[in-house]
Length: 263
Image 1 (tube, helix red, strand yellow):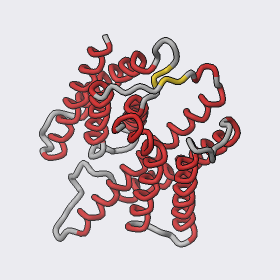
Image 2: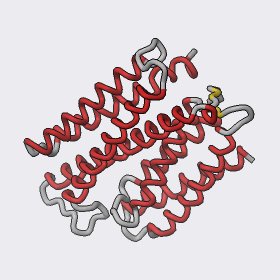
Image 3: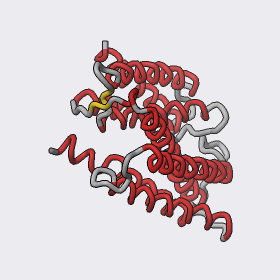
Image 4: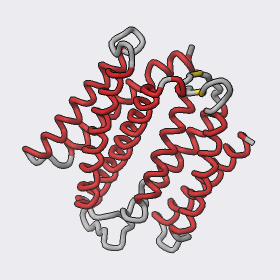
């Protein structure tokens, strides 16, 4: 049944991404509603797969591929919810394609990292906050890319976005800063929960994660401060958003990728 869920999720995600890519290129392509329905089926199959891949006896398999797939599902769910109020059609194919890729990685790269988080409520809080912080900041990164793309289009001579599926630049920019604010707040909470519930955040096992996460937090706080005080927009915001996410990705997945996949 696990394989059925995985294959179903991949197929429906890719089908939805294909339809939306066609709509971006050709306005007469199949409508967004059909693509959203397909993606909802894909998301349902995705969480069905994760529930069986992660929850095993005894404990939970929180391998790097399963965690990455879980993050991608959280991002997909958030983007689908926001799709009803925020035009984000250009981002959805990327999100769906990434989710399909993480399912495939979880299936074809069979790594294991067994934990017993049900015995450590504090660890559950820390992991949950970390996942939501990372997921929110990944979505912020996607909106930063979209903002960069729209800005590039606007600078082209003769370019017109009146009949384009792209949302207004100011709307995207406003959403980006809201996501950065929420993501940074969640990152602060996740770090505080780590210091409260984990034995030693600067032990050999956690030191690099803690240090990189703290540096990423400084980058995000600096970014938000610059936007608030000096009115930063455009290139500075995009670059710092990318730098912050790269630091967090290294913190969350860097050493685990080497230990679980390469070694």
